[in-house]
Image 1 (cartoon, rainbow, N blue to C red):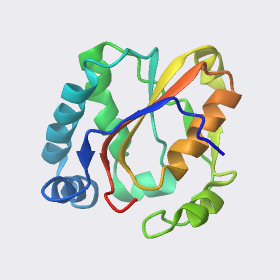
Image 2: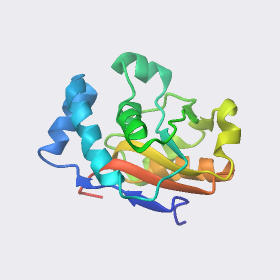
Image 3: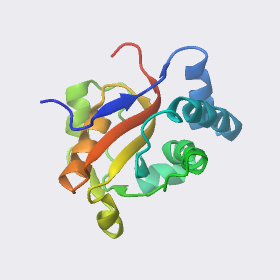
Image 4: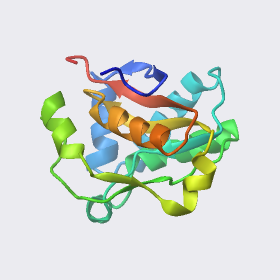
Length: 170
């Protein structure tokens, strides 16, 4: 089945040295690396058609508590400010589930079933909106497919994927 998102804007390959910076940002709490990564994403997204809303890929509260932040949200905040686009926490991760890292596309899709929902207070903002879903790394597009389908089914007119890097082996 084709994905429900319209296009992907993913400027970099998840390879050296970017993979090191992303790893430092996510797992070693190097927030300065996150600021540099956000600047790279801003430069790439500035000339793109401007969406109505930026929506970061959500993280389960337990994982966010363990990490201390949601890396997608930290990438999306300066992007929203620079491009003057509202940042909306329109999605929620309902189930903790297993980590996606190391799973294939079918396993990831199974892991994501029923894992996400629309935040009810943002349902009206989603209606007929062009949304850019912001993430750090795209591997199999399983999360992007799942979330874009959820947003389209909730009434979004269009969903684009804006991410920093794509893993080269997929």
